[in-house]
Image (cartoon, rainbow, N blue to C red; front, side, top):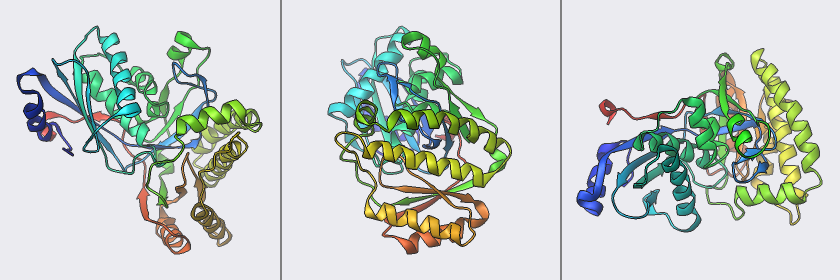
Length: 353
């Protein structure tokens, strides 16, 4: 049931639900984003409001394609990567659809079929692309008339970082002010002008399996127990301000330096959590050492890591081949992908199906 547009979805849905399927599928595509200034920690668990603002780069690889189609049967049906979603994976989608239904004033349930082109749950932002695509497709299927900011706020309720994948290129997620409804209204992402920087991001995958500790659990544990968390959050607010200035002046080395220290600091907060959370493996560390060696050789390459073992390296396009070769030769790498600035989330038009 993997698909890239609504036509491929029609037959499986018709076979399963027959005449109970309502209307055409709304199909959306979204890409993952990698935070250069990290989102790590919620101040409000209900509305997914972050402790600090963050800034990301949307990639042109690993898209998620998601179709939403209403149906007349009770309950939502969710298929992820060709398999029926169960447990928490199903519950997260169903809760998100409840939000959409409430805003649209409708009560029909839906069939959701979603496919990730990249690894799922491995620290490569599949939840960001997944819930951004779901937000766009579900809003269309239920007839919500929303602008990009409202879509960003909606996507945030599924996965915080998804609010940034609504937009292409560089995006900043404003932490907002207050909790509850006030915080919900003021916490959203928006694009910032940075396309002229035009960097490459080399994604080195050392483990594409699902993490033993989810990002959500690791984040909660870190915020609640790590003595390093509050100092990191204070420093991260300064990093965000410096990062925006570095992007505006097209200063790639400064962007890289800020991104690397912010990511290393985030992982340090996890190491001091109780119990500790350690995502970086020996292979991850070997790649970090390789990045240091590249800089010693005069290549402006800088590492960042999300909640997982995989390493991403920011560099100039002119250096991407050399960096890719060095990473492949310097560690036990399962896969390497070269990414550039990618597009925002979008509906797939009828003439593209």
